[in-house]
Length: 243
Image (cartoon, rainbow, N blue to C red; front, side, top):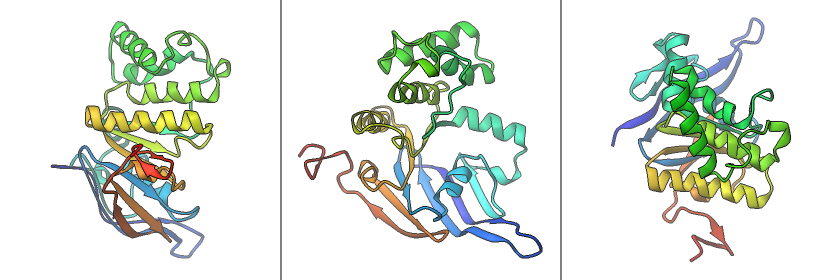
């Protein structure tokens, strides 16, 4: 199985005056295969958010190389990088990041418009995605007219708009109640199991990492350890997958 994301001796430093600066990531080696469900976890300040930005091609390393679908993003121009992100990665953020002046349907259509999908095709796919997520009656409502859970479902639909290979979820349940959070995680599990999507979950919540097949623990900017989940899935009553 091919590597979809790969890091090779990656460092990320932020300059601080005349000093070498602050190293947020150090000597990171990471290989995520196509179709994996991987969780990246660690305490605040561990470097996981910086890693998320590099994995999602939202930033480039100070040293080392990051490969997205075998392309070295360190040597790709911003316009090409933006197009690569649009086609390969669907983002789900804790804060939803919906455009407040657009309704749900328009928010989901937007990523498709950025890669020149026709308006008719974009509208049809957006409608189907929103219906799949139980928002068929809410697609013409603006974010301010939706609950937090509904906004996150719009954000999930938006992340799937361009049928990406990778879904990158950054604390996707952080602003949700437990019931809606479970829906979101179960949906990500379904995208992985049923449709073969590569899921990369970034979270500090250890209750969520049980969904992943592989858990990567970050501490002080380095990968501290990797753990394989033999029976990934939601825990119920202390057991996984209801068993």
